[in-house]
Image (tube, rainbow, N blue to C red; front, side, top):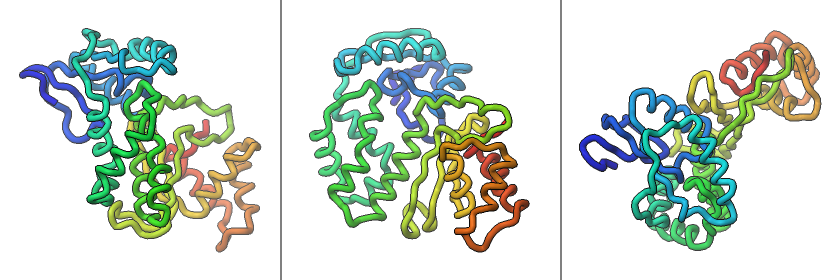
Length: 280
């Protein structure tokens, strides 16, 4: 949104080209406590742009206000705006309606004439209980499931879109794994498509989403049964070195055809390359 010739307010999630304005306005309700892709985008922007931060403390519910105050101080340690000021008047409901369209564009299209009604009912039923605008939609997929329990394609589409939006903003701690051990990327989310989805242009299957700090992007990857088995092993209590993980995978006799240790190792290395799993 253009404010004047030299200033532009950013809308999140960021899509398309970055405005050419020298000064960009961001709002606390969009960026406080953010990590992952959103933080990376802002850190890159402030290398060449001036950032003004608008705050809306009066909109933050009292139940989370203390946490908000801690998070905004943490955010200011890396954001470094040239100015922080109270933002202009804000209609929270209208802001949420616009955000719905940006987070769930294909879901909104698929809902058709029901979209506005379902969106507005959700906003009416769900109490505002966060300092981050996007967090208000974290229950929407479950809400849809109550409304359209038989429409699996719609529910999977909404889950897909929410998963991408959620990963883009969460402050994951990318802690290096212990020496010689393998660990799952803490941002890992899995979405299952029960049928081919023409809207997403994706085939039936299991899809992994992670934030890759190295690639500075959200990585999406379809998993085969062998890759899913490797992830399942890593989510158990036991810890594995790469060699032990491959050896354990080789013992799995429930999946056919069975793979050789060399083939299992290729699966492991492929998952590591896409930052779905880590090892030192």
